[in-house]
Length: 166
Image 1 (cartoon, rainbow, N blue to C red):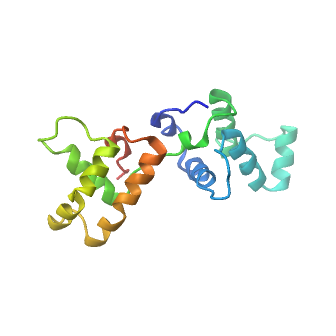
Image 2: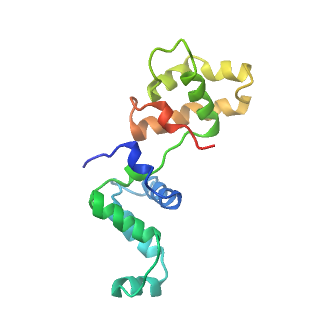
Image 3: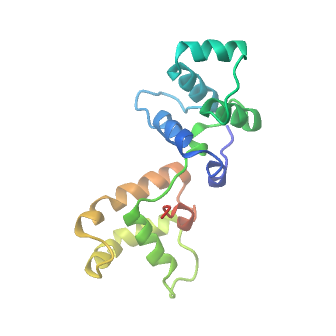
């Protein structure tokens, strides 16, 4: 199966991204979720009269999630992994950590997710708490959050691409 870049997810609506994230993170799923599997799930959530109308093609909806799914399937194929279409953003606290690393004049290369993880393990979170950039309780979940991003997108992904929307 082909993995698509993080940029592909930027073309997905927030609502569809949330639905795909829900399907991808389903602990009962024993195999990777494809776009077509997510579409079947979405179609199953719709009222039966809507599903019947869909089958008969007697409806015209603007930019529904189902239409959006169909366009993605047409462009990327039924076997495309749903995880590639989930918008991923660092939370507010992790975004501040990433920004501090991006703004570091001593840094020679843009930070990757693995560099962010290494900096957190080396005490960056604690230092940022001391500087007032982070609250004490925000430091507790940063490592788990960056580990999730690494698991999903790989350790060499540029951390800046995951800065949260403000």
